[in-house]
Amino acid sequence: MLTRTDHASRSERILDGRAVKRWLAPLADQLGLLIVLALLIGAFAFTTPYFFSAATFTTIANQIPAVVLAAVGMTYVLIIGGIDLSIGSILGLAGAVMGVMMTGAHPAPLWLAAVAALAAGAICGIFNGLIVVAWPVPSFVVTLGMLEIARGATHLITNSQSAYIGARAGVIADASFLGLSFPFWIAIAAVIIGQIVLSRTVFGRYMVAVGTNEEVVRLAGVGTRPVKAAVFIIAATLAAAGAIMDVSRAQAATPNAGTGLELKVIAAVVIGGTSLMGGRGSVVSSLFGVIIIAVLDAGLAARGVRDETKRLITGCVIVTAVILDYYRHRFASRW
Image (cartoon, rainbow, N blue to C red):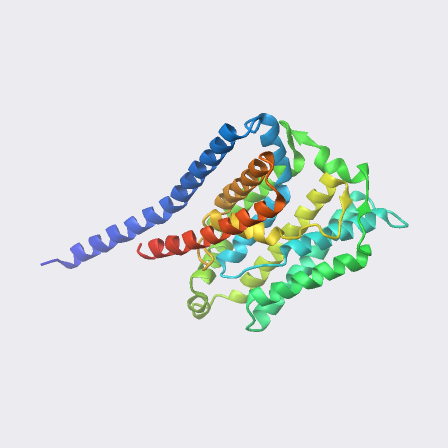
């Protein structure tokens, strides 16, 4: 017959085991992502001439900062059980604001245009966050509306024409360190900070708790509305920061910038192991997801695959990632 002490020690062992599993789960996901990435690189290296080169990987690294920044925000949104379909249009709007300010009758300096772009993104995020928390409206519907609002505003302020800025905008993208662009290092810094916030702060714990069971968190006396609103503001502001990187790299702002970005980001984040059902995710794993998508795009382009085919493959990747997320969620629930 088990004594009270035996029961206590058994409970402690069970809790310790669960804690170890929760700690090992992200590492297992990241190891799996590294294996997938290695297999993908190997496949393209053996089937595509000149793919496996420093120039290819440098190009990929310099092209992904905007996607990485958007993925950090999307990771947060999915963790709280939401979704943001507007980040592509917000990126386009922020870039348009920056471009118009730098090419108008009285051109603004780069720093002021960048601040205005971030402000435009933050305003869109405030709109998304306030609507989601003020009314019982799914974030899918709210951000779908913002997708159209931001894209329409982008075309209005640019008259549906590209704003060519020139070398003044390229200062950010032209700066480099160790052969990689300054925007790439900014994106890596955002991933590190984002992961620390998620795993080491009270705000991060609240995000996971809200995504796991919002009602329990609310009954525990924690205000869930500020957390959810802040997440949508962060996501939109990071998308706007991505717009600054893109405008600097292209030295121009186009009204169609960011079209379809939300699908690519969602695919990357889900591939990285963030659950569409909320309560689980990793910013670092989302970075691996972005890299996998970028390597896939670069490899298919190197093989001469048409854009239509690449979109078809990307769609299949999204569906596969959702199915894998379902089984990951079932497996995790057994723990």
